Length: 619
Image: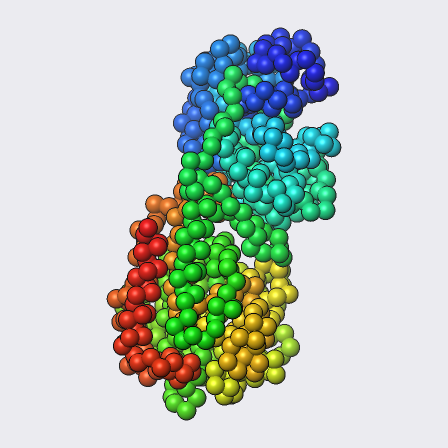
C-alpha cells in the first residue's frame, strides 16, 4: 500500500520505520514531497569502478546529480542524514550480476562481506520530489490525480560516456497544460539538488520515444486535450549505466523506493534575467518547444528592433512581427542540417543580374552555422552557380567561412523533384535538412511570376526554389525562415496581406509563398547579420545550452571564442562587398528600391548597423 496520513508527518523519522521494515509499503510516493525533503536514489558499485562512475555522474549531472559518495564499506552518509544506513534505508533493492537483473531484496544485510569493497552513490531524484512544488505553482500533477506512478522512458539520447559507463538518457514525463509550461519550467529549475528544469517539451519522438502508453518504468499517465508532454532527466539513467558496464555485482534502489534525506528541497529564487527561463514554441509538426533566458531573449528582441529601421521609408514597419527573429533562431539552434538560398536578379539588363544584398547576409549565417558545427549548404540558380562558387571562394579567403559551403542547384524535373531533393529517396520521414532559410531571394507572386520592386517580371532568371519551401510545409521536421526587406522575397508570403496594403506595387509583387518565420529588416543583409548574432547569443545562454544538450555532457559555452570569431564584422563585410564589385555584382539599393541614397552614405549606414549589432551581442 502507499504510505498515507499521519506517517507523512514523521519525516525524516519515517526512514527509521523503513529501516526496521515495520510496515509494508510499495513505494514512498508522497512521503517526502509534502514536507519538501529531498529524496535520493542509490547506486552501489565495486570500489574499482567508483572513480569512473563519479566522473560519469559529473558528465551527466542533469540525470545524475551527485549528492554524496561514500567511502568503501561506509554506509552512513552524515551530509544527507544523521542516522542513515545504505543497506537498509530503501524499501527495496535491485541486484545486478554482470549487467543482468537477478532479483529484489529488502535489505543488503546478507552481502556484508561484499559491501566492504563497495561504494554507495546517492543521486538527487526528482520523481517524487517536486510534485508539491508544481502544485504550489498552480500546476496540476496528472500522475497524482490519476493515482499512479510517474511515467519513465528510455530515450535515444546518448549520455556522455566515461570508460565502461555508457547508456542512453532515461526521463520522466508529466503532462502539463500548455498555458502552464513556463510556470513548470520556472518551478522545477529552482530544484538544484535534483534534476532541475525539463530537458524536452513536445513530441516524444524527438527523444526516440515511440509510444507514451508504454513506459519502461512506472505507469502510463494519460494526457488530456491541451496537455503537452514534458520530460525531465531521471536518475534511473544510473541503473542503465550499471547494466551496461556489466559489473560482477551491483545494487540499486527499486523504482519508487528512494532514500529519504534530512535535506529540504532547494527553493532558489532566480536573481537576474539570466536565470529566468522563457518557453517558446518553435514547431507545430512535430510539436517542439524551446527554452531561453529572459536576458538572451531581450537581447535578440533588441537586435530585431535595430534591423527593423526603414532607410528607404518603404513602409516595412507594417510587415514586422515581433518575436520572429527569436523563434527562427531557436529553431535554427536545434537544427543540425540547414539549407540556405539567396539571389535576387534585379539587374535584369546586366550580367550578372544579381544584387549585393543577400549573399553577404547568407554567408554570415553560414559562417555561424559552421562555427556551431552544423551542416550547411547553399542552393541557387543553375545560371548563377559559377558566380556563387567564386563568391564562396572569396569568403573563405577573406576569413568569413572556415571552409567552402557545398553549392547546390534545383530544377523541377518531375512532380516529386522537390521531395526527392529534400528527403533521402523521397521519403518524408528522412529529411536531409532540418531548416531552410531564404534571404533576399526572389519570391513567387500569386500569379506565378517573380517581380522586382518596379514590377518587372524576372521569372526567366529565377529557378523554382520556392517549390522546396512549399514542399517543406508538408514534411514534419523541416522548418522554414524567410528574410526580406520589401515583401517580394521568398518566405514573405507570411505577411503578404500587409505587403499588398502598405508596400508600393505590393498588390503585384508580394510573394505568395510563406515561411514559418518571416524576419523583416530594412536591408536583408542586416537580417542575416542579426541571425548570426542571435545564434551566438543563444549558444552562450546557459539555460538554452543545457536544454539543447538535454542536460547531458558538458556545457558548450567554452567554445564561444570560436563562435565569436564567426560573427560578422565591418572589416570582413567591406572586403566581401569589394570582392562582389570585382565579380560584377551591383548594388541593389538604388536600382531595385528607388532610394535616393548614394553609395558612400549607405555603406556608412551599413557599417554602423553591424557595429550596433555587435555592441548588443557583447553588452
